[in-house]
Image (tube, rainbow, N blue to C red; front, top):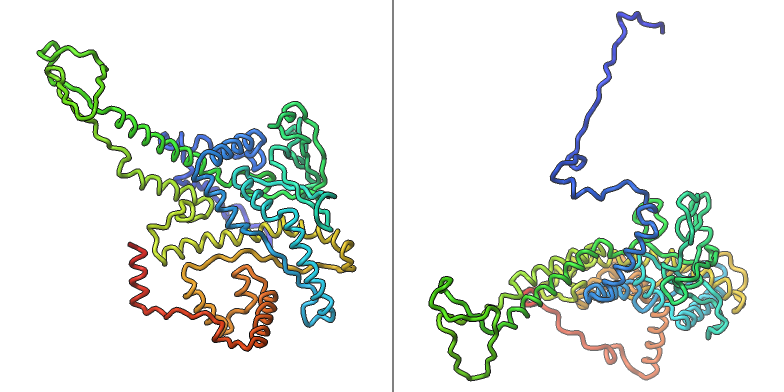
Length: 482
């Protein structure tokens, strides 16, 4: 193809497209609202000073605000519960080593449960969840403790986020943030841990730190932005709301006390220089019960009306708590520990989002914390218990199940799912945080004992309550709503 002559060439006009979005406009009305918006990176926005300030304020609020303390404790109890339970899956049929695998499974599960009790694994996990909520991150060191009452001497030592820092770190140093050094792929290589807490008796003086390999450190936090290396408190968006809630409550109490402390207020309608008797301003008069009092001439006694708390006091607290709990995906009735305004349907609907967030957090705990602990424990356990060389350790974790609002309806739904083959016993027991193999073995023991004692199923089975009709269920829901 040859070139077209200039007269026949198509001339392309350059057009500039100026698209506008309301949210991108800066106006006198929104200038102050967006004044603190910036384009800092995740690590620059969450620098050492910012994280320290947020940690201090979050800890102060959790320590002094009853709602903040209750919300954080409830979250830790719901996520961790009584602790995770390990189920090994070695030698599942039709594997040729099914028999050997089954014996190894029972040994590992039994010994790991005993070790977890010896180190108080559940309690330390709850403490880590509390630390993540108020500090933004939780750290644990995998150490060897010869004094531990367990054949496996692995132990878990928790440290606060304040100790993970690098004194003298400059922003220009590549591959490092405060307390952590990374490789070229962005994976942690080592952690810098102060030998003493900076807030302790010797921490303010000593700045010595240890360089601990990343293999020995568990760092649990939620990365909200790509490239984020350190965590921020889970209750960060709610900190101003917690402060407002306490200030409003104290203001209501102060106003009510001020009104209650003034028994009688004397006022006069006489003009200045009129016929009213002279009374010293702010003068007080003591009263005794059942006494007749004659006031000064021209002065009329009145009583201050108690107008606190205001009629909107409860509604204000409700909305503030609802907004506070939203950043944790927690419904109001869980945050306030008050379900007086709920019925059966609304209670279940609100809990669905919360329980889903709990399952997501538990999956995160398994990946970041528990699997790391199990790998370190197995490295020592194979030698202690003579388990032999095994390439991989297939397993799963069980957590406490959530109690159903209506056990009868849940039992009916469970039976329907099993009868229609849309679920399995393993899945149904997992909903309750139980190991289906352990439960079936226990059930087999019970059935064998009943046969030995000559008892039938009907004799030992509890009497089921009579099923409710639809009218009775509707009346029950109406009573709950009322």
